[in-house]
Length: 328
Image (tube, rainbow, N blue to C red; front, side, top):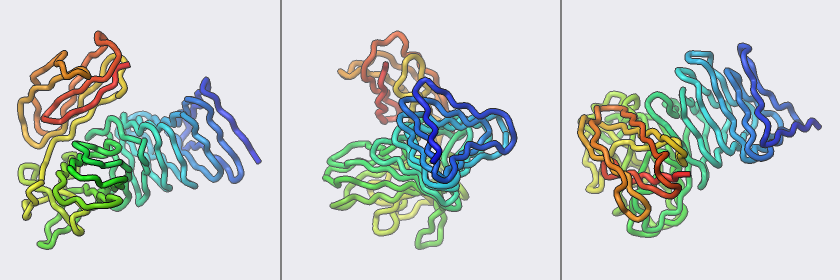
């Protein structure tokens, strides 16, 4: 039995060659201790053995426009996973899980009928129109959240906010990208969410779906309403269609990196041009900084310097959305 061990002081880098791969053979073990980095530059990861990821970060990097790479073989349970492949793609050929951060820094992940499991601790960071997860022909992202009289919870930062006045318990949220059909034969955007509470139902809950402009399909951003399908457990958006009273369409708002040491980037994707006031509050609700920002339709990015602020918890208020920021 082969056994490879990497420590927190180790960076394993694969660089250069075309169609390169890190292959874990049958019966072999790759054991990563602590926070080591495994960098696969224009290289695939093929696992037919066992990968014990520890608290490591697997980084798929590459130059703009380079060939597609993949994750293949047996399921891999990552801790942190970073995608930094501008204008390129990471293709899944097996299911994966991410217990920490799935950082989107460049390029896309094609689900390819596979699943990314974020569990109750994993989350997506930095997803934007230049780097996102997609799967128009199948594939899902799942997250689990405890929803007990919760307000504005976005499990795993997968793009749906849920507010409910009742207790739903442990709730599984599944995000997919296949277009949906309503009873009138109309097609939705290329994104939907299945929300499955362990008890109770979603009656009276407020569901707020985010999307990217590339996911509109045949739909117009200026005429979208929330669709509730499959006995009010599947939610998506499309042409106006008897939307429930709790329908809401809100912009996609996110920050990265988070936690932050110096500067972070605010990402706002919005359906129509607007001017908005963005406020940074400390944990006591005091406004420590505010900016008036002109938002254009689509993706907007704003750099924000927090180096002069002390460590602690802050909240960024943008378009009535509240983003928690940890300053280290």
